[in-house]
Amino acid sequence: MYYLKFLINNFKEVIICIKIFRMVKIDEQIRQLVVSKLMDGYSQVSVAAEVNIGQTTVSYIWRKYRKTRIVADAKRSGRPRKATERERRLLSMTSKRNPFLTAREVRNEAKILSDVSLTTIKRYLRESNLHGRVAAKKPLLNKVQTQKRKKWCQAYSVFSTADWSKVIYSDECRIENYSSRRTFVRRPINQRFKSRYVLKTVKYGGFSVLVWGLIKSDGTRVLIRCPQILNSVAYQSVLDRGLLGAYHYDEIFMQDGAPCHRSASTLRYLDSKNICVMSDWPPQSPDLNIIEHMWSILKVNVGKRYVMNADQLWASVKAEWDRIPNKIIEDLYGSIPRRLKLILKNKGLHSYY
Image (cartoon, rainbow, N blue to C red; front, side, top):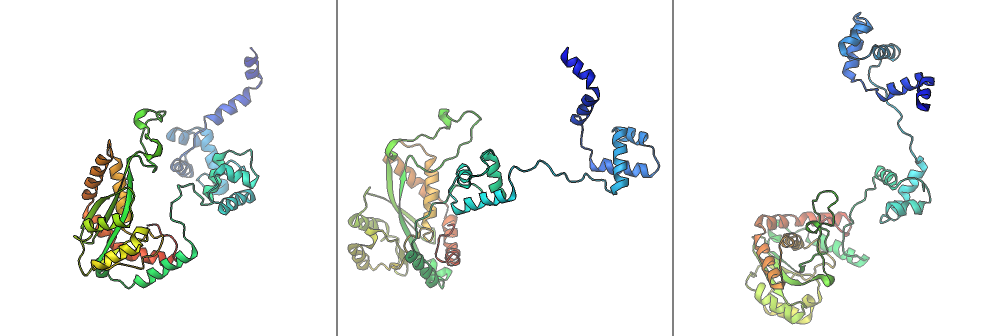
């Protein structure tokens, strides 16, 4: 009864509210047609019937056109922002000072907008071109290492494509059956913890294999299973099995600065075998070693296989290593000059490789 009395006493206000909620935006082409018809002498009633809109709407469009000479909808101010320009700048500066802060931590650090949702805070940060992303992992570089990388790139910038084709790239890699890398899954809503969509993990990483590999510009690749702990004696045994059969007298052998690579006994061994070694390889430079990209491909492909023990894991690793197309190795060798230029551009710091 109360609601009926309210409707009777406030009839006009209720009708206005209903009209507002039923309001539909009129297309600009219809607006232009209405104005054109009225300018040609048609009545508002006939135009309304022809375009199937209300006569009041036709009248409004015509009055607006006669007043502003504009048919299109004017821009509206929209909902007012929760934060002032100064507050948005403060959020941006806080995030730039420490880019690893979360949106909540940025808001708490800035000590503003405590009543604003985190979704709004994130939107303000995105408007300042500060987007949340997974941070890239790169080795820590000190000033000396940065300078060595820069000087090495400057020295080897004179190498031609033919020169680089004679460089043999090598490295070790440990491959685990349960990787700690982020893995994406496509699943239905509310099925996050269903067994088939869950990435299984184990304590202490399960089992793994340590492998040593080399690649050459002609597509030749070698993969050797190594002992779990690789010292100088074991490394020289690996070179006996993997390098000597692939090495040619006019080639250069690249290895990084791992202790077993640079030990006196290993260097004597390489010298006794007449192996020409790239002895000035810069420290902390996986972005210059093109075989690192091969390891990335290998880990992804092996991760799709199900294995029960280390021997099965090694068999999967070897099979996937042999399946990598030669075109990828060719492209990796072609990327070397670009890598050098990029590191020089970054003054010895990290590149995106």
